[in-house]
Image (cartoon, rainbow, N blue to C red; front, side, top):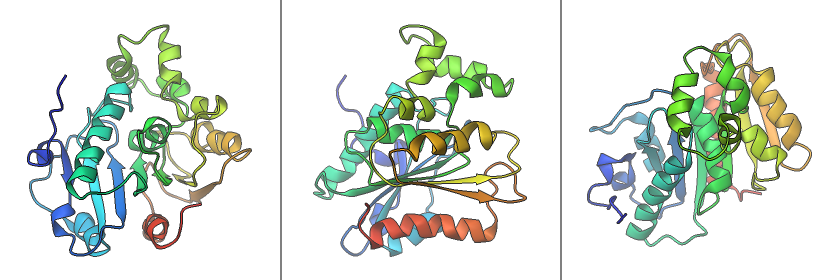
Length: 243
């Protein structure tokens, strides 16, 4: 299929704050929606404007809200990134930070494994890390995962493993970049021990990874101090060289 997304129609496919950037572009932050996210932004908002002040392009891809970063979602995101690289003559060395919460956290991690341009860092909030386990974790999930992976070769478990950060880590497919995982200790939707702690235990054997546990908070509900730390971690990727 021909390329559908152009700079002229980009806002139909993603939110981007790029028109507000006045100086030299420092890089791109990708922020992926959680499960069921369907917002489309006609107006600009605080987060986008805050990033623009720091000369960072902030992008929210409008991928399928039940996509679980399947193959189509990866290609869709790549296409958006390439539109912006072409528009602003940015090279492949551009810094891209992959971020997101819940399914968006999984998306941020999984995108790092498959992206045409590997992000320089990944920072997530309460991410789904074991997609095989998550299939059984809540009764609302099987329909969404079947939607995402219908048509994949092999069994459903085989398909889930292709986009499961824990299994990608076990198979050596996660790139060697820094990872920061925030996870709320009272998360009842994405279990801390079954997801982030298992993923970190696997990754820390070979990768630079930190987990920041947020006490007394539920799913993705970062405390004010943790939220400030979350954005600090993102901004630091552009202030200092990503290792």
